[in-house]
Image (cartoon, rainbow, N blue to C red):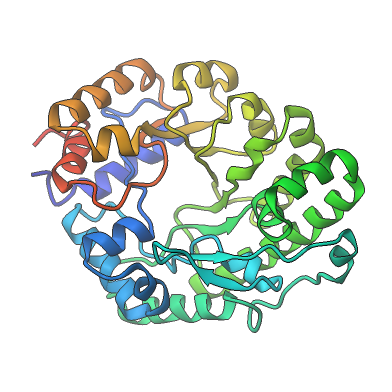
Length: 346
């Protein structure tokens, strides 16, 4: 059992690691979202998404069990920004919200408009969820997981269809650029809307953009890097977080150039090689395999994987132990404890 003060100690270690200073022990981050929150709390995932009371209850249940290491925030999955642009939401077989692609012709791009967060798609629902959480969470818990936005590449792929969007990058680059423009403006208004409701963040501006890994380094540098700089530049004094749980080694340098400061990275990226590529420009959060090791492994498997990763990449800071991707539904609590205890022995 870790100490009651561990969350604050871990927070201080995390800040040192982000600044590429080596703390006394590596920090740990529990990256959790709807699948784990809902399954651990025995709440159907659709009810988790649609009922702010159940979402808050699920998140507080997990937070209390895991030493106050998990965030509390209005978790909207990947549908908030695409729905605000006009995407129709449907529920997949697991109960997660998805958005149907609706940009069937390039001419449809011209009809897109930057959404109003107070009225369009799921944005107003999410803002109400934030307000509910802030009013009901209690004085000792801060509602905060950064100003979290889906990145422009992923939004574009969702509303156009990923294959069509990737083809557009080659065959219709100006149309692709126009689509990315409105997706970026959507992300920017959503960042500002969250700040107005949530207030100051301890995390920062947080872009989640898995689809960026489909691009070549040149495409990323040309089409996407300037857009990331715009999004991060809204609040230039904030930390610049990033999530992408696809392979990203080929664009690591471009990600660093675009301003990424803290990167929750995929499990199948070689972190030693990644640190060699970017040096002290990015702090990596990861990258224990969330399925093969943390969910399906035993205590020895988890402990050994964490020890190996720490030994290989923790030196010099710039590293936060976590999973390479979000923690899966059904992951045993004792395995999560083992990951925590690898940096804070009981």
